[in-house]
Length: 534
Image (cartoon, rainbow, N blue to C red; front, side, top):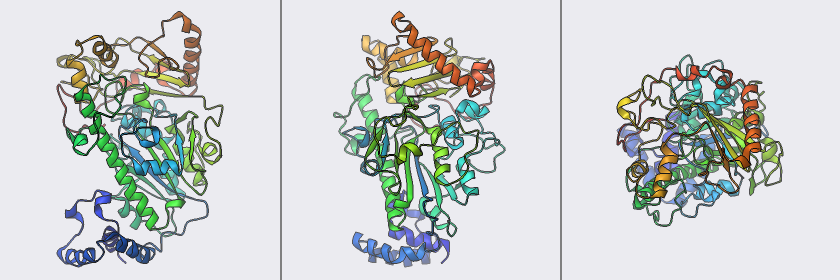
């Protein structure tokens, strides 16, 4: 049977509403449309669709399900700007994420998962390479190319016999440069399109890169979808106002859309009999697109969900508190595929954590993690082409941040007429109702002023937060004499790791990052709509 015929029949079995396929693309020609429309009527009801799936799907995919024993498929679901708190599995009682919660119940939830950088391009580059972003040359910046000398796990899996591909947002945004395809693999229109192009006997690795919950949002979409705006929890880094609550609800709406699409893919895998032979991984490239979150090194910017299900090998119903980095995913995928892990990868496989029966802190050596940021948007005042370079170390008790250029604006200049790329306005913070509210109301009272300063004003060279007393990371104790020894220890730990892993910023070569070309857009004055792909 031809591939296009498989796709058409498959879309009848799993209705396009599950996969986000617009109705005008269900069929390619009038004759096929008439024929398949008749079938759709006959199989409209759910129990009949299920019957049809059981009878015919093995025939459609009979040449593609013969897997080698113990070698799993990989379904990697990566959101675009989703913080770790916002799922039922992480304790949010307002947001509706039944499919994410199902994967959590049937798998492992990581409570301390962190990105390498809270910016799309370097975060995704670190995921595909399994390396700290500062080792990736121009790839450490937003829109920076990923040099071809860095091996990426999709290529390695493909060489090992896997069928690999992605849809929507893979490694991005950026120029491919000398690479002949996206580091995430070949692009496919949909998950079912990917499956029907799968060669005989090949396990698969699929990157589902949703654009949700990246801005822009449809104003009021959350409330219109029934999200109880008055019941949601406003993070302590934002003022509590109707404008902010509505903005968070709109963000929730897009997270819930991720959940629905995940449900469609899980149902597809169940229908073809491969769900339990597939390692399902759910995470995000950085935190929510709000002030003091995305593009910042506080938890709301770098801490993300990470949930993994693989019932044949991963005991279910556990929560792991070990610190893990998304750089750990590439060596994990390679290990389960029995593909050699390149020595250049700095990430550590998660398999010891996944296969144990224990919960909580499993590996005592995973007591901290590291992350950082170079240039997000060149939104300093001209002629400065740089970003706001930072590195940090996070433990159970402390967050220590080293700001290498405290003379610069941490999220870009407020003086848009002076910005390097005009009219960038606080360019590292996406335009939003929350951003505008915090700026417009900064003088309402002491709380509004404090939260504005924390999000937008200049910062000292060192920040230290005692998480036992200040879990929201609002009070910098770096200058408190009582923390002198703690700060010195964390500084030495951070610098030692950066030196050992070849970070140019600490070796006096950080200007390299600042001088790289930038080909993206900027957040303009009063911009609340329009999608900037970052």
